Length: 479
Ligand code: ADP
Image (cartoon, rainbow, N blue to C red; front, top):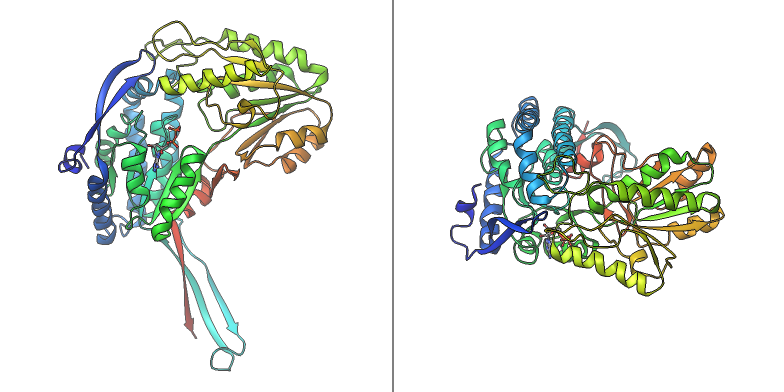
């Protein structure tokens, strides 16, 4: 729905939107507030109840989703332009993520015609009548209803599409709130979805701050599900807000990914793997590997290699097509990253390379390698969400497993070793929803993605990601 429609009667505060590479304001959007949230939810509800989307023949709904992917492919240059400018991410990364977003729609387009329940013939002994009875029982898969989708700023377009695709495949109607820092590519979606054939009112985009507009969506009594990606702290607030009508909640939260490099690892792959695994997107990814445990025999070599890898990375804004890494999203976030590194330094950590804010416009922080850290330091406990990696030596397996698992988070973990049995043993023992063996940042829409511990509830991607937007009804028929 166009913003001028939903925000018409709301006392909209204005949110300035910046290019983080220059710190210049490039747009402004309204903080639409609770009344506009009511209006958007009412529209989503009306389209859901009307059946205009959920009762569309699956083969037709599938075609609409496929067309969304085609339109995104066709308009990719334009979307990359806006995404790179608003988020600051390097163009190559924006292009990868937006192309992947189209693939996510193709993947879920394939599922639409394969959503079905199961049937069973059962005999209940001594049933309610005291006699044995035979039943034919079957399950129906039905969309959960109105889904509220709340997304963060670190991969704005991709993040929106990853939630929309399974929600739409399931037949839900949606209200989507992008992050206040990065609303611009989400605002391109109404046009894309309309051209593809998504009926008007099925997807409603609202812009606003988390505490006002986001919170109003999370607590709304007529929203059936919230799918949230963001910080663990905000995830807990969402859970509380959702309690009012016990709406379903899926959460993709923070991480503190440990990566283990053994003496026998192929360092020609492990070092750049670990480097890219943290410095990509300036460390602003929930699965970025921020704790690197290196076996003593190759410790010095890895620290040096990683420092060189970081120093060689080309930082730049969206106007620089050669840039490998962009800025941090905001001044506030830049200061937080800098403070965490400074605090570690004061407590005895050694900054081997990087560690400084760049002396140029925008919010750039150098790729940073830190050693001499202790597990109780804030930079070892909290998600930094910046290009900062701590390197810690280890000797034996039990020690490193205990340290790697010493975190409230459990989103991802990585192991680099040539010993196959060890790799698989560690995959079982590391407490994380995703484990990479001799790989880093690998992901595919066909594989479930979710967090252990305080990294989340439920799964995205794959069948499980679709099932998160479906409910199951059981039907018994006496035969
Ligand atoms: P960050 O700290 O990285 O900004 P958040 O978890 O605060 O991450 O934000 C992720 C998304 O959650 C954003 O769209 C933000 O507006 C939204 N948000 C923040 N606070 C709340 C809240 N209390 N209720 C609902 N949504 C919120």
